Length: 409
Image (cartoon, rainbow, N blue to C red; front, side):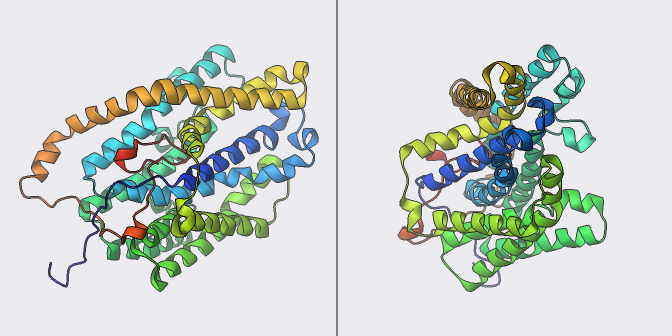
């Protein structure tokens, strides 16, 4: 390769799971669950504001919404790993097959609850809204999501499009490192220039968090360097600022708790620290098998817990009391998540992936006729070959032999 051209990455052998990341994903999901059940919208489902039902607990769980920020940091790490060694078509097939089986099921269940059971009492949507929600593109046309948590999937989709572009152009260390510095910076400039289109495309409220995850993946595979850690540090600071300045006010308004910005900074710094420990230190070898199961349930739990949990709380609070109702809501959501994982994801993910790949075969054949091969990452030394094979925020676990899955979405 001529010296003027950046060296591509090369994919290494099959990597074992980073089980601690699975555990962190579950912790993030449970934080969001706690936020929805004990800190937000309490006057609609508990009958009185949540801060009156849980006067001490709600002040703590009000920060649970920031589990989304943890999801996005992890997503930056794991989606980059998922992209390595794959063509654009393979990457698209992987993402579609991981996201949509559980998502379609969650949309159908939410439509049944909102339109057939509660008849619009919890969220005023129509059947046409439900049909459009199946595309996962409802936010692009201003249509309400059936479930509030679906908004993170739109953010994830924009991130996936960006990574697909990198695969198409050739994913190299130099380009990724430049991207980690420039992407969030351009997003900040879009905010300052009040460009709504660029803000939508560059997702500046969350791009620093994805960039932190990408930087940690570069350290994980390529080793420690001043420039890589500088990229992580700069984006950590930007992520802290964006969370405190643009995310925290909405949390304060929805919970009724005044949440100081300094606490948001400490939480984000803590998130970056624990993900760094789980991916770039010997702790990446640690973990137990149950953590993989927990990671597999994270995505469906995230998708179904909000509306179904609120419905159970509203239905049972008078007869069971506060804490038994809370326990039933959580147990129901976890059970529903397990059923979706067991009978939907495990049965249909592989089939959908193969179907998408078959539909993209003309692209693969064209790639074999002389077009550039998919970009891949230089193998790290043996001590750095560990990776992560499960999914994100917010998502279903991928088979151990197929690299990495995703939550957020």
